[in-house]
Length: 574
Image 1 (cartoon, rainbow, N blue to C red):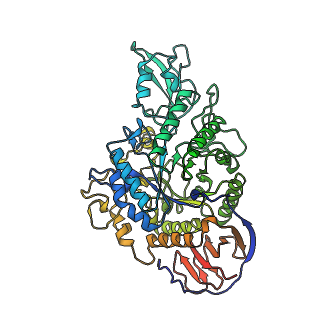
Image 2 (cartoon, rainbow, N blue to C red; image 1 turned 180 degrees about the vertical axis):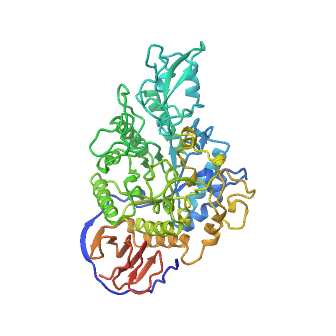
């Protein structure tokens, strides 16, 4: 398949589509309303000291590449002090950098270099749970039942005559029970503590004022160091239903599902109490200049319920997982785009668009799967319906070009600009995701989307570092995806993203008003915004196009037709 990008003067031949409805997104002029935000997963971005794990100096050394790409901000996944049992999402100290990643001085240097390049910096905050190594939890284990130390977490007596049954039937997102029993100071089995994720990640009790005050202080610590905002991990969690009632989720709800349709949310997701927390956080950020931003990782359905997270006095953005999870279907894509823009606009928030992140199968593979793949399960060599790489890449390029033309804010996950697929053939003994271990290998988990990036085709570890060490093995064929193999090469995925981001900025597409276009057939998504006509062919036959200047194309367009699995941006003439 050729992937030559047409020259700006290429033209195509006729069929004028009919105009449809127009939709817009959000209000106001804050930078985050239209920003393209690049997610850096520190372990896998760039390794400055050669130990096989990415770090802050490594990130700083490669920030120029992100400036060249044309993104507006960098979001850093956790780099805090942690035993790394869940790749840093088990935080032991929220106010320091883990030595694995560097020091606070290294963070300051990173932020300073980002500022020089015109890049904002967003950091993760993980408020649902701490690490079991956190000083608070160690104090809780050493304290008696009913103590103030245990009151910061969700300790409960067990059920049954001897308390040997968990307090309820909740299951961990990573598989297995969501409760673990502790051994008390006298050596006898005692209370149980809740952990919706791994047993090394005890859930905090957000009804406790001390917990709330602690996190306000944590936000201020990083705001004072100059961060531009926070991505809030499990933002639909934290508050649990009173009494912690038993709950069995529907089979099709997914591990992170926050409720389906009009049904009540699970007792551990999407509770009303979370909104009080975010209203308080909103006031904290408002004290700082520069339009600081709160971004919710909230797995909540339907979109109308998710909008509650981004009301004017709460968070500013929420990840649009409904869009991410939409399959390769033009009617479904058009429906979710319409619903997203209308829903978020109703509360004055921008729509956000995302196709990949550190928790999901990369969209260069996911969009070509032919079997069900629930979120969090991952794919591996024994999975059913494995993708055809060429088809996956074509669809990923087309989907990305479509996404980057939509009004609102877009998120790019590191490596997608290289067209990276999911790493499927990782050896079993190299896997590190807790999901893999807690399900005895039944679920592959998220390692496949977290493999370190290829920067150079011929250097050790493909340029990830100078030693060749890599915390997860890199596929041998990733040399073809290396940044130095794509930079400046017409038609490469890197150049496609670079050109799309430049055109997005030039045409101010993030602030656009989307007008749907009819007349292309049911398998096509087509719209006009800011003088650009965007057409994505999700069908199996070529689609006739109007005569127009080609601004961007994800596949060679020869003659008057757009091939299947391709997107084109045309200069609108009227």
